[in-house]
Image (cartoon, rainbow, N blue to C red; front, top):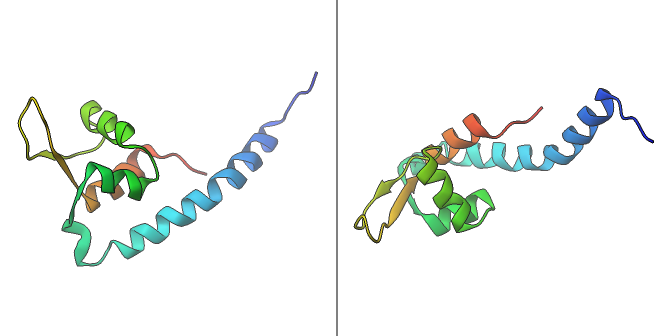
Length: 96
């Protein structure tokens, strides 16, 4: 049976998360421009986060991601601000 040390897990996590961290840091720098207030659809937010639309909707419904509903309660049409995506990333994505 193998036993892995905490150092092994830390190294593994840093190697797996490093490209993700770099991508989001670059996205955060790029979004510091005037486009921070640009509204995105759920589909665009999912593409920006590299996840699926259902995941973004789940995050909105759980209250983890802020969005405004421009549709009806029966057929919601959410818009997410880019600045809220950055806040979500900083609050809920764990790295290091």
